[in-house]
Image (tube, rainbow, N blue to C red; front, side, top):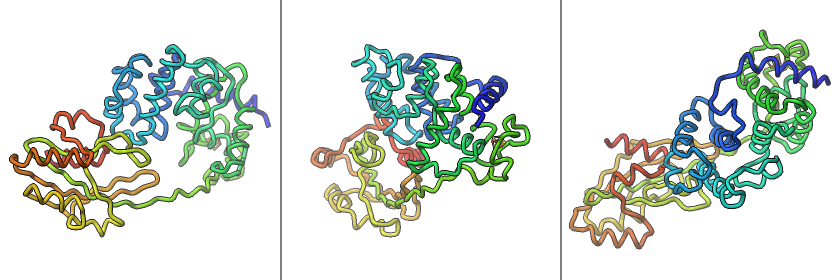
Length: 357
Ligand code: SF4
């Protein structure tokens, strides 16, 4: 395998074709780390405004570490995968408290930080410190698999090992930073998942997939994601201008975000306010109730499909004291609209609130 030729072609292609992105042309590990975390499982066009917001609000890792978590979750709102935002905060604190505000300057040291896996550690170590460690993300798997004709399943342990070993051999020893950027950008722009631009590709003469008509078949990925369906009935409870909320707990989606009290049902068809324990408890406050059963809010995550309906309760002001006690006893909170606006919320709650305006 001619690794040198492969790396040289990518290194020639990169400066002529790369996108001008704000986290390129820097060796600042904080900026590189922030961009890498934001861009995981996110398209560049979607992640870019978030990156700009974070850099504006937190120009340094110290600023990020000192921020309350709710503020970070609020800025993160809409990006999904909220565990990344919580890890971002934990990692910033770790860097400030355990490393005097400086990121560790090696792949191995970076791997010890919260939320930094092999890919992110390799990206930071190579871009910031020019360490020779190969990145392996979806783009890199695709380019390597097609060019070298590797059909091992990329989601298998065996496949990951094989591709990592290949990536380590292919990386340019003199320009590991530029090479890593180049192969990822090449996968994003030229050797794309669908409709790869093979006709203008500088790697075409030596490309196994192109020469064997396998471009559409590689890489091989067999892992099927199991998607479960969940059905939520949200309770929108208002009294004297305030609204009842709940902070989501651990071991479930959206940890730490602000939600409405909810009851979960076995399937969307089974959602029924009268079968909700909260619905019956709230009768004590003589509410005006409104349920729009036909208006379902759907939200799709990688492993879950969520169907939600909302039932609203307007409680007369004279029940406020009793309601406050009920709220406290249930571990809920009472927020005014401005407070609620400033808190990080799941996307479907934001959609519901916007529809109500
Ligand atoms: S020839 Fe096509 S499949 Fe091969 S590396 Fe180039 S773009 Fe990818």
